[in-house]
Amino acid sequence: MKSKDFSNWLAALSAGVAPMSPERAGAIDSARRIFDGRGTKTVAAVMKAGAPDAVDGGETATRVADLHDTLQGFVSFVRPAAKKAYIDDLKAFVGFLAPFRQAKLDAFVAAVCARLESGPTGTGTKRATTKKAPTALRQTVVDQYVRDLTAAHTHDGAFRDVYERLKSDRKVRAIEAAAIASAFAFETARSTPKKESLRRIWRRQEVFERASNRFGPKSPVS
Image (cartoon, rainbow, N blue to C red):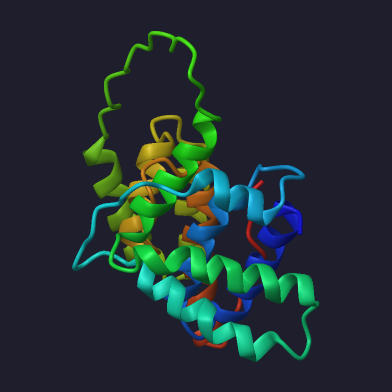
């Protein structure tokens, strides 16, 4: 199966899980990053090229085990309705996750994506590379938006105002948006694009509104 089709299928699973378990939906969304933007590469090819050597473990962060067990449960659940290709790739992905059960999920996804984006390694001369210094996080900006979103999330109009301000604020780069999403919504990797972080923030609000029986407008992320 093509990676983009598998990614879309994971998105559908995530949407179905979100009302019952935002945490599990967030874990599935994190895993989608492995397959996003891989074009026509097959799921098997992505897993073969992206397998990391080792990933740090963690006690408090969402672990690969949480995603593994969630997807393992889906194998038998979706088998009657899904095509064989989807089931086979889902089972293969569960097997791909198994050796890294104790690793932090975001660290694992980042390691796989880094391996995929580095391309195949050869025996020729390596080019010299210059490492860029890590971008400093604007913590005061992050803290202010987390406070504003938390204060406004029970008021539809007020939340939308804060969200639109966040969306257009040039001081909020991808790393700030990811930190805000982690604090307000779901655990989000530092390398997550701003648009994806905004989507997670809005999804957290949608889940709250559904639970309150006052589901509002569709996500304004564009």
